[in-house]
Structure formats: structure tokens, C-alpha cells
Length: 249
Image 1: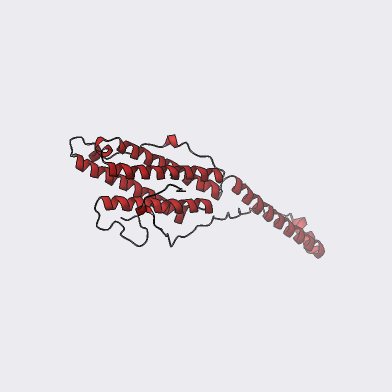
Image 2: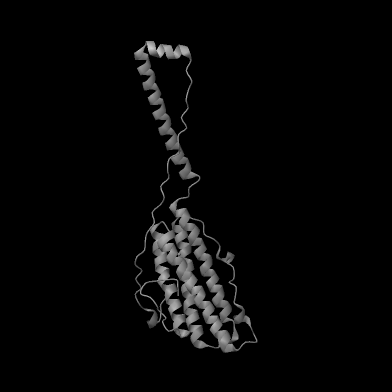
């Protein structure tokens, strides 16, 4: 919503995503045909009664006319709707992929802001992990941009991404540095979980094209790994608390 970045040994593991339900495009239904009823004068009705052959010809002509009208009406309706009102699967996927670009760029902005804090900057372990995660988010963003181009869409400018709202306990200069550091880690974890959840939902419920779904499922396990790493750092009892992915953690 792709990763060629080398990872440390504890990141090298296989993640399998099962139970995904792939959506298919919703086919357009035909427009209803408005049938026009024509009134006949008394002389016309009498003529039809007196001459059965003429009446049969009239029925045949009417049947052909109605059939032709229905076919033309439905055909034009489907074609017009396909071009105008209804977006293609590729166009719909581009909308999500562009949101993914902004989400990844926002994550990069959050990491950059955290790295600028003095008590984070001095922690070599955190800085090393943050550097790795940032490089992966950057790779995700670039892969999303490439996918948008592949689908024939127009990519959003990453500069349009908004900086995330930083929690008050991170910015509280009166608080202990140790407490602020924990607040930073929890904030980073929440951002990673949001990303993982978005990619999971996209792959299983939103995306319609194979390239977009594949990219989302490639990015998802990396985001989930980030969450697990933060859980271990924060001392969570069960860093990986389920056999299958869930956003309720």
C-alpha cells in the first residue's frame, strides 16, 4: 500500500497472512427502460379487429420496437455509467494507495521528530532501530508511488502529508526523561499498529486489483514486525499475542 532493505537477524522471519477474502469488482446493472404506451383511436381499434393479419403485423412491429428499445437503452446505460459515474477498479485502488503514501510520509515525519529529541538521540539502540524502520517506511512510500504509476493513476505529492499530533506526555519537558522515552515508544507503536491495520483492511476488504493487493500484503508483515519489536522493548508480556494478525492488541 517492496522491501529490499536488509534487516538484522531478528527481523528475518517468514510471515504468512491467511484467511484473506479477495473482493471482486461490482458489475454495473442495466438501466430500467421506460416503456411508452401509445393511445389508439376508435378507427384504429376497429381496423385491427376487422383485419387479423394487420393486427399480427402490428404486434410484431411493436414487439420488435420494444425489444430494440430495451437493448439500446440498457447498452447505452451500461456504457455511459462505466465511463462516467462508476470508477474503474484501478482508479479505486489508486485512491487508497495515495492515502498510503501520505501515511508512510507521516510516519517518516514522526520518526524524524522523535530522533531530534535529546533523550532519544543519545540512545544508540533506539536510534539504530528507528533508522531501520525509517528506511523501511521510505521504501514503502516509494513502492506505493510506483504502484500508482503502474495502475495509470496520478500520485499525490508526499509533501502534502500532515505531521502527526504528538502526545502531550512526549512534549512535557517537566516530566522525567525515562517517562518521556516510554511515551515516545508507545506513540511509535501506535503509529505502526495503525499502519498494519490499514494494510490488513486494504488487502482483505478494499483493494480490487492484484498488484495493489500484493503490495499491501508485502508491507503488512513489516508493519506488524515493528509493533512486535516495540512490544518487546516496552516489556509486553505477549509481544505476539495471536497466531493470526489482529488489530485488537
